[in-house]
Length: 181
Image (tube, rainbow, N blue to C red; front, side, top):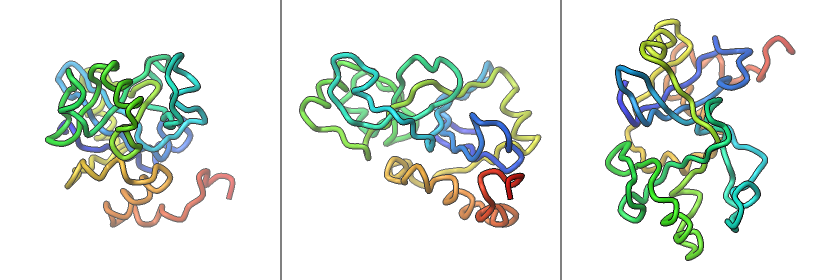
């Protein structure tokens, strides 16, 4: 698993609210553990509704079940946000929030160059590898991370299933909860 690659939840995750039909970008992968953010679970809140002093209607996303009271972000503005951590050549996470605030005030941020998350997804040493071996996740290598933030959240899991092809195509038209069918 490489930093910047995606994990696509397979149908075997049915019943796990946190990860059902999730697409996660891996932002940190080490032998001691891994970290990533769910890209396609938009919350009902905006950044301005949860951050005092921030005037923004940018949507927030559920990044995962760990540290849900903390704000995280990925972006394509590594050169404009100091202390950003590279995920790939053109995609970064974290960085100086003062710089983010300044860019918000100047109107230089768009939903296509930054995404905000509450919480993150994390795995302890060896845990992610076990889940991949158990077929809970399908690793997915991106050809271009730059366009990742432009894919509508509602379409992301479906687009990944199409790209994976094969057996995953069968799951495209199943209801969210097949037991309710």
